[in-house]
Length: 449
Image 1 (cartoon, rainbow, N blue to C red):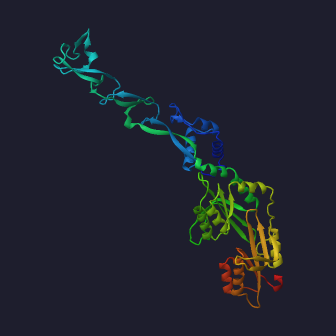
Image 2: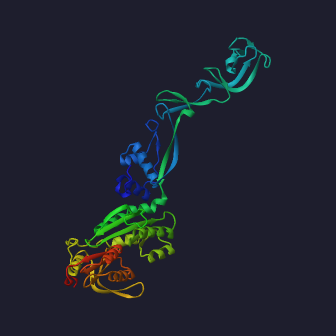
Image 3: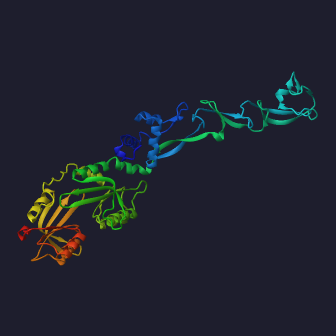
């Protein structure tokens, strides 16, 4: 069976939904020795038109994914020759394995040494030795009792305990229990620690993905990112949403933190998530938390500018955002905006709210004025782009670019661009690339107005 997301596999989805709803409490096997495997899963096979091997493969794959728990239900034995489960057990002779054994008092004829069951000595109410046919009259003189034991009628062996032997009713082979193939048959139940996660996967997550796509994002589940990692390590996220508006690319890293039993999700898991985004240089951070964060974890998340959805907050948000309009697709092609006016036109067409000469208070308390501030609100996060206009007689130097970058940093703005005339110095260009400042060099000073 495939390991696709639960909601994308119709069989898995229906089974999980019925388990969550309590319509199925346990998938139990039915022992049927007339079948190839000796058992079936009638409920599952009928519901999904599966063969028994397919039903078992499905259940085992879901167990491997920790969605189900399995519990021993029955023990089946199979013929080592033909693998049939149709076996018959019986007590047999330890020497020749014959089933033709009898239990009773064993008498020994002291003269000829014959050992036989008492019933074989009795003839016309007398003890007659079945071997030499002499009459036995006196206990202790003619014969003695060996006690209650078993005797094989085939080889004559006497033994105190019979040996369990098996016969395959399919191929008629006889064999000992040690040669039997043993198989355990299991029943399966929902892993309750996965209940909250499954409820999210089959409900809000699907609507979240649709919402992001409606906002113009390309969405990947379980995506690993490493191209921009400071450490060189790769980091996986539950959802990665990317949007390129022709000027700025946004990457939202979303993780879903679910605790299957505890009432809170702790600080350690939020810290791990934040470390991943820091290593990748990602600033658009979203956590979906079920059921909720502990107070220290929430305080840390808010300080790190992580957008939080706890408990049912995401469902409420998606319900209220159901009528949100998707962004307008810009017809402007990247690289064609060679003036401030054309850049502003492009940003507005891409869904940004643009403000010229905007002032914003920084973390230091200082107020910073930017030539252009453009904000794009996708409903989950607000992306702010700061645009500076830098000009000089010969070339724009490092100090001007550094001062712009410092103001943007203090204002907690990560998306940055500068319109430059006539061009940047090599040192300033190198710094801009390192600080991920988008550079547009225009052809004339008039293009900056």
